[in-house]
Image 1 (cartoon, one colour):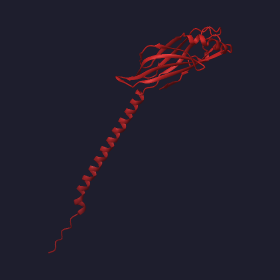
Image 2 (cartoon, helix red, strand yellow):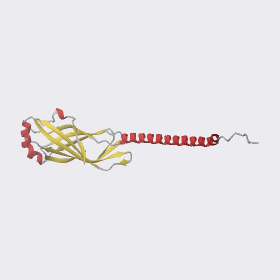
Image 3 (cartoon, helix red, strand yellow):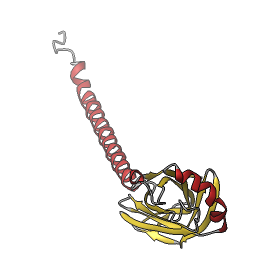
Length: 205
């Protein structure tokens, strides 16, 4: 008598294998998705920290500049005041020292140290004041008086220092910093109002 039993269902035999493959594939996709999400969150955190801790250069602005006796041709000293601003929120700045030089028509009138080494905390403004009273001033007084007769005389004040940035307990390497302040004074030797608070360009080198 022939066997009337139905043939085995091949699809039913392979179904558990397909289910196992589907579960494994879903698990792999979930792990990859979680890993990519973790990488994305980590990258965002690192980027935000980099933005908040990335050092910004200090900012210098000329506050005052005086050359008394300019019009009379008797120039014995030049005094100035510059503000130094640390704009960083979390980064301090170490200054090894600050020296100043004053130029007239690219001729140096004098140089002098104006500030000893110091630490500038974040969001701090420091006054940098100095006075130049050297022989070069007397020698150039005659030429400067000629310009003063025209109503205004231009000078260039250069501040130089070596600085390093400090983030928590980490210090950066040293940077040679130079700030250049261009000013003009009137016939009375006082800085013209249009230059008060003017920003002094900075470069590293």
